[in-house]
Length: 258
Image 1 (cartoon, rainbow, N blue to C red):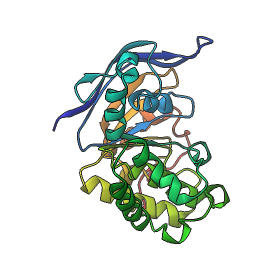
Image 2 (cartoon, rainbow, N blue to C red):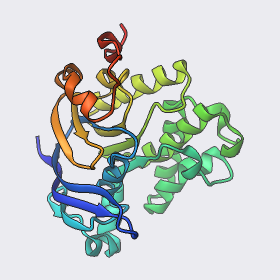
Image 3 (cartoon, rainbow, N blue to C red):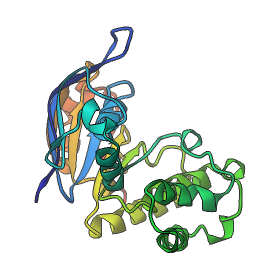
Image 4 (cartoon, rainbow, N blue to C red):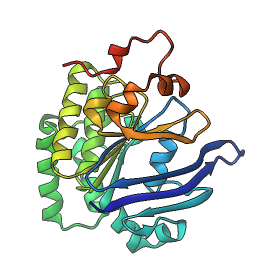
């Protein structure tokens, strides 16, 4: 497997000086399913945005596909477009991502922005609508949809660009059980199609179904553990330390239900 992302001592501070990441060192390999795991405010969403090229670290180095992912790299239009073809991100709040008049136009936006031929754009719209079961919603306005439907459209708008890497911030947050099950199954199919999946989450009950490896961030915004999901979930002291469980949490609640 080739390395997709490599981060070395990456830190990020907000303008007021508030730290969001502290000296994070991490690598992600092609085809992996990785969960960035931590309590709210630990920096996992910030880490996701750094790897998606949406923000630039205050210090440290980020490499994507063997190239330095710097501000200079992303200001080069040709390089930035090549990167956007390969990496897609779905935000926690679908409302922050959806802006087009119809679902069809939302799905078309990315491929059009990549300047793909018209027939290719049409093919991708048709295939993505079918993949996510959105055909009946194609002419609807995204803002009129339910939360689960919005999540599907946000995901469709990214998948229509056919990225190699799919990043998701709290992917199952706010979803009803049926939609949550649908999403987990879809992500499983994407993994089988050799997509690299990186997810930020604090939810332990679905972790085994979503990821194979977990990167654990502490509340002081550092990586304190990296390992197989089963090993991370078995380390009760670690989960208590990073505020992902409380002392009275039953151990069986950390496992996905059959």
